[in-house]
Length: 378
Image 1 (cartoon, rainbow, N blue to C red):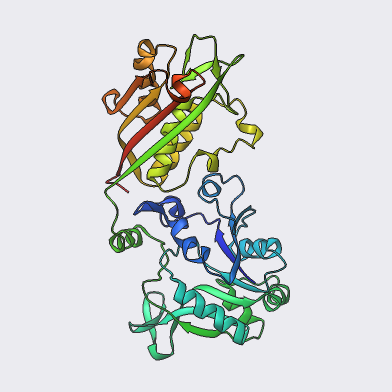
Image 2: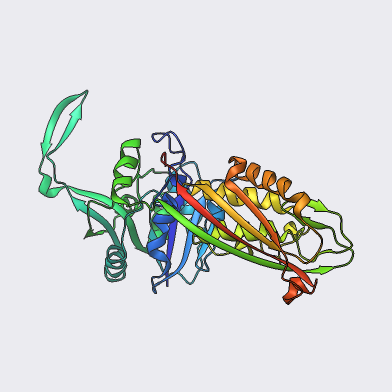
């Protein structure tokens, strides 16, 4: 089985901000770097190694193949080593791919896997197109034969036992990539030829180039629906407003059905599933949680994806109580959560004239539709 280690604990000094969380085309850099590996049959596990305390990157992934290890080292070499120690033992072939290299494709990955299984070690890369020279104190020292120059990329692939032996045999030495370490251990590495488009994001200029390669959707539409049962002994909270009533909504959190529908609409627009994925009712930390706080987390995720709210339209179906006196406050709460003006938020209430779950006063339902726009600055 193939295991993939994604080192994602770098400081991004030359970019000036965490480049892995930069977004274009509705996806972050780290998501794009991981995506090609997700549906590959040979890949059984993807281990993303992040810095201790990193919380945003783990929130971006909910896939059975993906694990996040918060044990990044001071160097890439240390980070990969920690990942290798934590990788499932069933993974006998190991790929290492840069978290900031978002344009690799499955054909290139498959070529590296095949070469690794055939030769024990392989690295993706391209031949130099420009004339390559060495420098000495800003003076040209020597011109190299560019036909002999190979510019290494990732993924780099290794037989797991070989990689473990290379780490042990070169202990104390520093290498800029794993292929160099294996070479230092005395083993040959097979070159696999890829494409120049598989470049690593390092500087702001690289980000500009990356954005030009992706046609970003200008807008996204999302729809959300939720329903909760009415019961005794619970507060009735809708849109963050506590409404006086003899019954409340049953749920793991505060059961704010209106806010839940809004969250589902936003997550749907981003094609991320529903609130059960991010805030499961099996997790005790969400027991009794305030749904407006969960909405703010959802909004933060939306912004990380490079989007902002255009407008939101919500309908609540409840036979009782009368909700009209509380609607303006609900709109204000939602507007604050999204950091938008009041006039972008619509909340309506209706009855179902004695029909269905809400009409028979057995529960309250809500639907929401949102329009998201790509941020011009992203």
